[in-house]
Amino acid sequence: MRKNGTAEHGFIAKPCALGLNVQANGPQKAQPNAILEKVFTAITKHPDEKRLEGLSKQLDWDVRSIQRWFRQRRNQEKPSTLTKFCESMWRFTFYLYIFTYGVRFLKKTPWLWNTRQCWNGYPYQPLMPDLHYYYIAELSFYWSLMFSQFIDIKRKDFGIMFTHHIVTVTLITFSYVTNLTRVGTLTLCLHDAADVVLEAAKMANYCKCQKLSDLLFLTFAIVFIVSRLGIYPLWILNTTLFELYEALGNFPALWVFNVLLVVLQILHCFWSYLIIKAAYKAISKGKVTKDDRSDIESSSDEEETVPRSKTLHSTITTNGTGGANGTNGYLSGSTCSEEH
Image 1 (cartoon, rainbow, N blue to C red):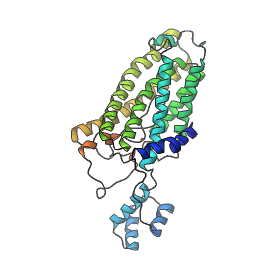
Image 2: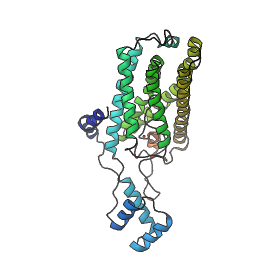
Image 3: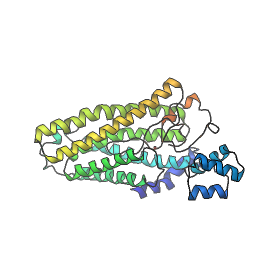
Image 4: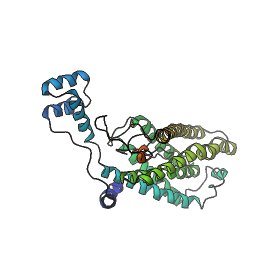
């Protein structure tokens, strides 16, 4: 699955990005300096005040210039806008495809509008080929997200995202092994909906289509909150916590499954808080503060003033948002110098 994404990066996404005038250049590079480079690579990427003062005396530089050099040196290892656009396009393509596939599949099933049908005949429910393919495709994609997290930029919410990916992969695998796949398909499709819009919003942002990015972000926020805080507990948790127990009684898999689903809901609440916080700042203050998770570091002497027209699209980060099926990404209040 990851190889296919890499192929799309080179043969499809990159030409599209260049055609849309997405800039290929990355952050500004630090000027060559053997002493600072040695400290950066062998000692620390974040020198403390004492070390900064020592370097200042050794090089006859002021401390502010050395801080700027280390910031630029850290940033130059971050991906360019072109790279981030390609990654978002790959994820957008997958999410759009799998969401469309899920909707077409569920339209033919009796449990789409009647969740009690998820438990009729359980556990002796046939594993249809379409359902099997749906599960394998989703599981493969989220395994790739979990492993790629270790080679991508390490963000401050690495632990939360790693927990999310573990829960996601465990849920998909556990529901497949225990044949709880009917409710699993509902959960997967529900969560893919918001991810499609988020990746589209990020691509619009990278293309500097600010109005479109603002609109897509607002759409994403609405879809995310309605689906994760509304439909998910009322539709998914209701049937797994109550209808499943009424239909089949108590059994060990029920409790394991529901614990994982509730953990997922806790993550939904956390990300919804970030989304609402970012939207509130954008609307009430006309600007957004720097994202703690932002790919690109900045300082007061280097930041550019953010135009008011950019306030909403700047809330989008490159990683995306979390979902029951493990969407990779989040919201924040950065100037969108990156993504997440």
